[in-house]
Image (cartoon, rainbow, N blue to C red; front, side):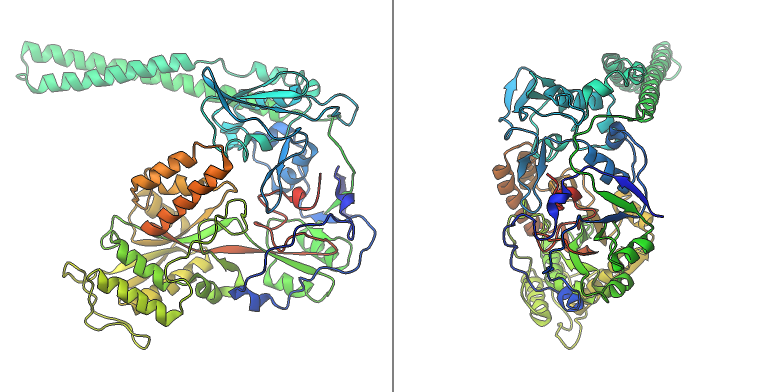
Length: 626
């Protein structure tokens, strides 16, 4: 008999035929995938059966507490189910991505400078209660955040709810909270970070974590700072002694005196390094022990902010899909997309519908600007002109990808600043080739035999008069789509007369070549994308493997990463994308696709970034939990 677990939810409100009205979805656009998926039944159901929705997961959740959710590795199923037991102040509405109060009474205040801190306040709704009747107050929120910071749970897993700038939270009274940041947070750290966290009951947890808190290390940061400053001074003195030694006659009395000083200096350095290492090791060990104790605590009888309680079945993947086919469940929640074979089997039932969504990832072509002639932006533009993301994705196996026409997916509508036309957008293959030729000719490149739609160019000569050197494009052997994309790009380049060969190698070796020694010409790389698109600045500024140095981009990114004003951030993001298209350190190609199957759900939108099961918006927000 399948195992069942109870969950609180307001999903009973989401009965088919009773779902709230949603805004009209955006007009569908044609894509290479349309022909491949036309046979899938994506029409909305017309019947309205009166029964709760039914779900299945392929693995049982582990019995973890809230602190483990913040700071330990947890499975998809565990995080999905356990995290929703806890209340949140805000959520992000799917598609709109607007910050929407849940238990907060309105939006937070603006930030203000207050001594050494940047502070903002917010209020909770009045008369909130936990399921056992006790008041739910601002003290619960402050306790949860401060405990997570005290145990450095953000450092353990990089949890976005506790950004490094967040110093502490104060409960001003039962309804009002004050957040303290060490420096001004940006939108990713505030609206997309700290405000989205969930929290627990202080009265329940405070006495239970006392023993774990006893294991925390004492704060020795001042001592570490002192030792590091001393070590820096001693290292600088070593350089001075070495300079003096070089000017003295070997084995003279002055030389021997300086040599003794050098030996004493190096011995002092060793002592200081050992002291620093000991403090850091002991601190890590104490934190590790304290977290282990914290994560081991059971949460029996913990107050929750409970609503209705449907059931979710735990079934192996094959049985879960069969249960969907047999009309015993309405949705199988999984981060894994349906395979082509699974889609074919489920398509036999006309009542099963399919949701096709872009995953929150991107595959792109990276140029090593340090390798000539890829340091020439005109060459990069000519290559980009030949690469049609729509045609590329149409050529890849089983329609498993969707084209990327920019760095911000259109499904991330809160940050999609409007399409910026890629090079040669809208042109067919012949027109793209002609445009690429014009770009190179204008930059001073010549051919012994010019390219045409009927034959490849040959004898390409650089503007300097030298022969065009052979180039290599790297792709990981584990990813067939990227391997095929590399072959497509190499063929396009060779048509233009550019000698480009494909090299397939293991992913870890590719990573080392690109991000380690940085020895490559071109490579097909991949990122996972966050809802808040600060990844553009993290990857294209500072010391980056594309060797991009662009002061204008650095300036815009500095402003983007320091503002909490959404409107200002959107405008800056548009300017950042324009700069990236102009300089072309890399070229977006495609994202992978998530296909899911369901019954009876009335989904207000055509697709969801990441799908329902693994959506960055949050599964339960999509399915209508309040």
